[in-house]
Length: 327
Ligand SMILES: [Zn+2]
Image 1 (tube, rainbow, N blue to C red):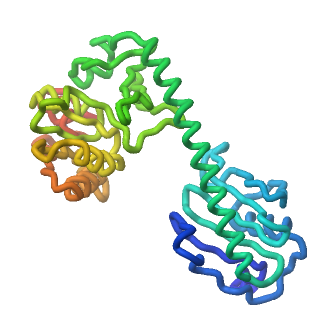
Image 2 (tube, rainbow, N blue to C red):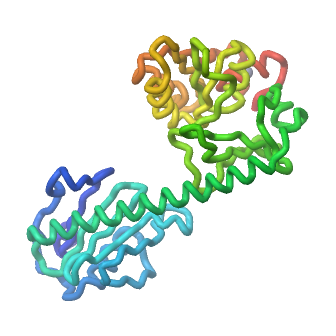
Image 3 (cartoon, protein in one colour):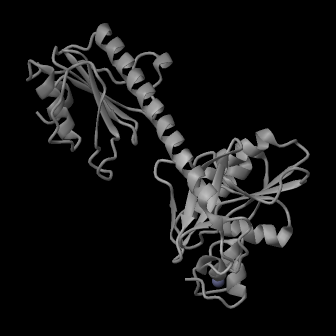
């Protein structure tokens, strides 16, 4: 009976990152193979949720979009959602996986169900995007307050000493260094660097598409794009050109595209990738190449003459060469 499990409960499922309304019918709307065991939607939904590791919910077939925690993420993640557009249909999914399921009591997925499912998904998506925008706004406001109230970074902050870098306009709140992230000219987030070098963004703030800039882009003929702030500062000190720090390798591609579209064609962009030589897949170099390729930019990355150290970026290489042990 397990093989016919989905159908037996009158459940169909799609697993797509983004399930667009305009692309028509969902791909997997196979009719249930056996009569459903439930006559009302609530127990059918609860059973389907339990299959996905979600238990202990009280569900409401009230047409309202409800959110719940996915079992594979931190408490309070609210990555799960469900809605019962009618008393016979429930739709639920998870934002972090793109997974989506339809549960029915009637035993047949008819065109009405399909339409209800699509509209339910669309509504849930719009609501989530609105929430996301509100959260971004709240975090950006907090970031601006912190930034305005912060002092200039102490050049003797342990992180700056360890990285052998000047503060380059960073600010400090208590013992935390603040790295400003801008998007469209507005401060949207702060990366906080603690004295031990651990880094945290502000909760719920924008990262994708946002970046920190060292130097001035206006009038430059070359702009470098890299991951971390320390790498950016090292490059900026070394070459004197503006450097954009995308903060992580996943943000290199969006930033590369955004820079290319905003800068005149006469301005060269050079991707300065990390060389995560010890990590399988070398994310730094792989993502760096992807970003460079997408916009036809040159790419440079550090090679390490040193051994038995953890060096992976341009700042590591410089510190290592100066006798600092990079662990
Ligand atoms: Zn080294």
